[in-house]
Image 1 (cartoon, helix red, strand yellow):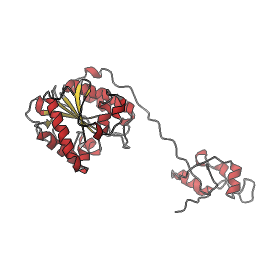
Image 2 (cartoon, helix red, strand yellow):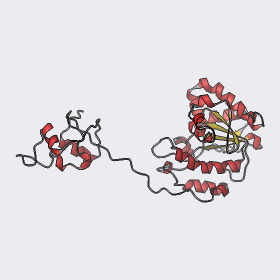
Image 3 (spheres, one colour):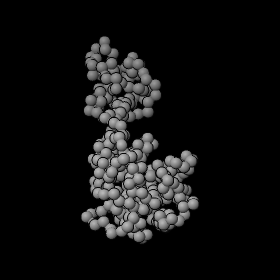
Image 4 (cartoon, helix red, strand yellow):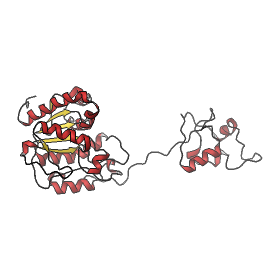
Length: 301
């Protein structure tokens, strides 16, 4: 379809909500538009309001006409409305209160259009030696209401099982493993919401949701945090020199960091490992490092 549209066609498209894009340069006057595009003036014989540029809405007026193709600018992105402050007293919440606060949270734009937050909390105070932290939830995790599900979740479960650890949250009706803290892993996400239009979280959004994560850490009391993914890494390395957090994950793995006083080990997310099997050996080395940290080794690094 040609985009060499006249003024009437542009107006009709604007009314239909169809936006036509073209690289814009300098704006032109109504008179210049009429001259260069041979549009009759308001006083010309046969002129109508349909083909006169002055009758177009400001949003439909052209920005450039020298090539005979007129861009129609879209409306600016809407500013999120209805956002509120973080709930008070997060640092003193128990598991039910924390889950309720997350479910009602409207503190950042990540909540816009979400169907449900992803936070699977235990029903009672529970200590886990492992906290596995992933990137923002995807569609399947939002649908199940659980972190690390489907094929990526199965791969993670197999990885943890290989070092004698099982996730705390039940999956598909499976009973919780009868294990002590050393054999349990609590799984969570660096942010709890998946917005209607998928996008990456901004720095301030990571920082706001970290208030919930910090309380999760206080309740779980992990001996090691296994960070799986770029945004989990970005948050957990916020206490390290800023230059370090700018490096790719592959350059940062293999070391022990700290967040809120808890040792942190970085590795690849299972969704990535499903696509890039060549890095599974490195992920296994990271897992063994985390297991050693949980047992009190490597804490001087």
